[in-house]
Image 1 (cartoon, one colour):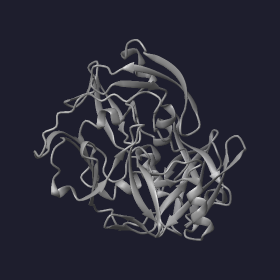
Image 2: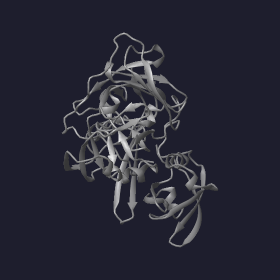
Image 3: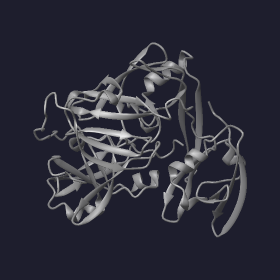
Image 4: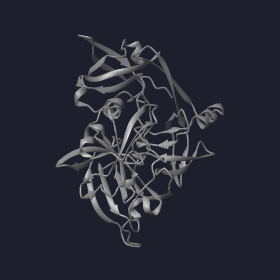
Length: 386
């Protein structure tokens, strides 16, 4: 499901500050902290403790700065700076800059992460359905080697040193001036592309518009076109492509699906990363990829035509694809989903629900939904797009 994704690649306009690192050259990496998180491709939430309370922060390698939600602003002290910023999803937000507060991620201090942002993250909570109170960005993460074991549902922080052979394939990684990590991949046989490695993006990735359109014109990728009818009656369009070959070192990937970026954004997200145990060795400029259980799983996009948000009153249909199974089944924007195949929607994460709606061409899905004060039941038949 591709609707309402939010990418938080934060500002290059504030100077990056990272305190001196404790680096033991040639030493084996020392495990500093380990956390249990959701397994598979679910968004990664870590506990941040501040003022005696614990909050959930998204681990986001696509974000430069650590960011706090507006509701935590009273805990941050006086602001250093306040300005308006246009986010990657096009929305303009009021952003405040603060000194890093006395907070910690387990035993790891956030106070040496430099300046932090404060912004309204309600859109991110609606898009993910998760209680996200903030975002852990790279001015914090870059002090460590950060390992995400998607199969075990573990995140490990190591003191940087000599990498372990068990970490897997080593890929050169560069940190851009705006503080985010990028790698070079080979796409569709003969196209090299620099891609941001973004653990905060839910799907496999995005290809910039110019490259996407070139691959489409040369007929190197099959493309799915979706037209969404929103709650305000307007229609928008998104495109996704299936890339038959992606090469990264000696690793080969087939049939990955990428969204078309409206601009120059090019990235690999959770849908790609979660095929591995991935280690961001920031200080040694390496990304390590060890093949996991999901390495060869087929990549699919939404097959229902439903685009959903988590609202206080439940999971709400934000938009419907024209001509999709959802439209044919009679669903409309603003409908509230109550049950999917006899399972209460409130017992599911949005990620799990979206997986259910891309589960297989021809599969039927029974849905109970609410429209106004009335309840309805319908059945839609999933349809593969590409």
